[in-house]
View (cartoon, each protein chain N blue to C red):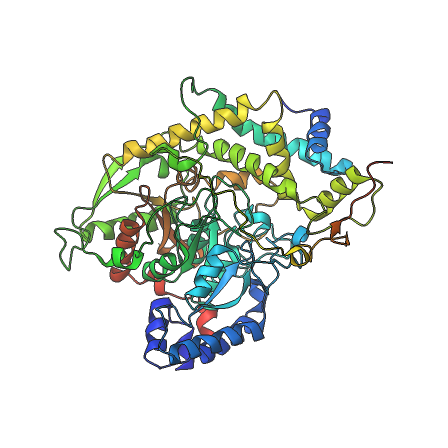
Length: 499
Length: 99
């Protein structure tokens, strides 16, 4: 059965392991062989075969003792923005090349405690700044559906690895769309929970009021299992939400009142913001999203028109706030306590300046410059304060929408994945492509990308679902119902099933 | 008002970033391109709106948590300094700043 092992998702593998159809060691060896065969994808930045095999043996021993949980022995890989003991933690930056963390991020520690086996660390844009994984200091990751195209970003390695069936699941982080957009571009399912649901402890900080961790996997069900294990209050994160542990899988399976087998989403009101369907939206994306919405209607949902009038404004608001927080967070990289230090310098200041010049890539430098400027004396009120006020208005717009609907839906991105190198010349053009994910990020709302069809060049298209605060259960329930009726989420790129 | 080369020099100094002259020229262009899309922000009247510094405060009161003032970490100096570029006797070394 080993030829089909990599086609199984998290839930299915959990059952296969529990039934003794396969051991974690066999599964881990099978996937590590695949990872080595798919080196050209650029998905992995660090691996340690012995470490993974030791964890797999421990998982099998745990099962033999009768102590297995639902995720025990299931492999996963982590975006290289989470610090890990035993595997280098780089954030995709030369600044942290080879960095050995003295501790595990909370998300990593919780998934390990649940018995998951770590296969390695996954490529990402430098400090999670980017939408294509092209800003990694260690080279781009490639889209398994078309190796000439980007997998999306910043969690590009995570999306590529899950799409290519190298791992059943991966962690990601989402600041302005970095889970949802690569999930959409690579045809996998991803969820960014409400701000505060997953601990940020040990997540290398980009923009602290926006950063959230979440899973990327093959299905909503797999995401529900993973999110249950990785989330929850953590006193080490000052903005962690204080609430009881959640069983998102049980929430996902709870039937709606009035639901029938044929109409599981009976009574669910899905809001479509007119601003998410502009004239400039690519026809293939629009077509796939509309067809998916028609499927939701068949399942019992009602589509209602809503408005998020400040959708376009969310671009400058985000690209003021995120760089401002980044410029502050990244001031810690000074060549003193960890990371790169320049070889040649004359004094302390030139050491700082040269270390940062050598360690950071162009996009990170641009955002540090923007952030430093908008926080500087005389400009703070006009830019940073104004952006934070607009952020409140954007969050209020969502609350107005949720009076008329239960979930909001639209495209994740205006186009399918673009070609590697296509957007290099104009950073602002890449910022504009984040338009549909930024509003939810600024408000701190949970959002998903659900495979919804295919567009130009056979590239995947994702449907974005946005819920109200802490409404992950409802999001996952709707996505699961859709995935029970469609098979977009289980399709694999041609190259992935051939090898 | 577009940024000037002097603005770029000043921001780079504040950010402690050494930029080559080619990088400065490109940065000036890119920053001005970016601030072109920022202008629309200033047209919105936000007079009495409270800034939203952390997302959940959009719907609930968010208080910063305090913890008890007790030692929670053990001494892991060697481990914590393992990735430092230059240490000696448990101290981080930097270029001399006082003669």
